[in-house]
Image (cartoon, rainbow, N blue to C red):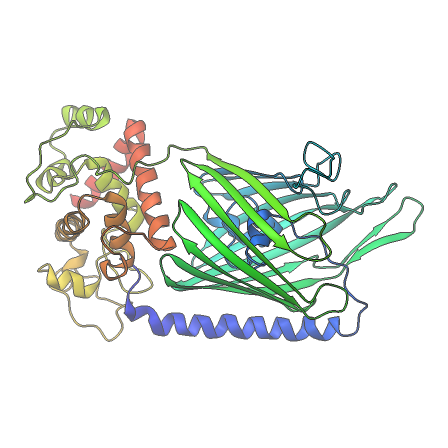
Length: 492
């Protein structure tokens, strides 16, 4: 329960700060660009990003993120592999918790200008043979910010070209469920690629771009990107859910070196961890109009989140009991006196799921307080806690509550846990047993989640986080026992 109206002043100040930084950077970089020669841009690669009119700066969220904004790697929950058939690019990313997410990208691996068959009848081809790049990237979430860096080598499309190193950085932040901002700075020190005889073949100057994504409805996203140093603007509207989306995008260039306007149309499919992206690009200086890429997620079990999980219905909803997990049964047999097991039984919820929610909310800290004033094990907001019968004072600043459990009962571990599980069961009943929607609503608030969905990106990330931890407990009894003992220490 973290996305509440009470956080708006805080986020408004954050937005003002970020906007100020962006404007200052844009000013200084813009001043430099007016004194330099026309920019020779690093080629932009990626079917999905190009299909969004290049407006992938603030919505990058897969293995191709480093090609647009390396900060996009920070939110990956599973490994991701993407191969772009059109441009011969391979992108691989994998999260290593809690260190962060690492990614590698290899660009222009095709032997010819076409995929598989160099023939005029083959509509799938690369833009220019020989623009090789190799990137190593890293992304991590730090509080409300996603940060990312990339370093690698670029080569020009000429025989005898040497390799030159480049550096990129990026930042992303989701201010709320409707608005996200991103920033990217490529080739920080500029890049000069030379022939082995010393001749300069290509130069890539600094490129600074900012982006924003507006989500007026969970199924509608408006992506925007403004490049400051090579003035052009990209925009795209995307409609759909996580399974299928359609999009139309356009790019406007304010330079004599490139076409003034181009547009694209395409779609993406995502089913059972497999992805397909297609874009038809209408740009004069590109001979091949059809872009196609395929991808897959790996490194973890896909949660069966669209099905009701065992024992997650509210106690007053008649339901035939389902079989407990083997780990849960073993734990009850080894120590049936655990308070947490008895509390889970009372609320008719699986112990591993209860532990997963507490781990995501407070990491078993009974006096945890979030940035927006949620408190205790289950991170209860003051208003919700009062509605559930807990005594909570009215604070002038919700982020600075009294941690005394006699004054604020949210910090009584027993009362907080009972209230949080009662509230969660109410959500499970509201969303007709759909565990993913109930978890998402617990995080962003039921006012932002309709029965039948879909979830916002933030709610989906939270639900996936809980479900992944839940599955870990079911697969690893030792880890579950360790965390259950942490909870028992708090309850005792």
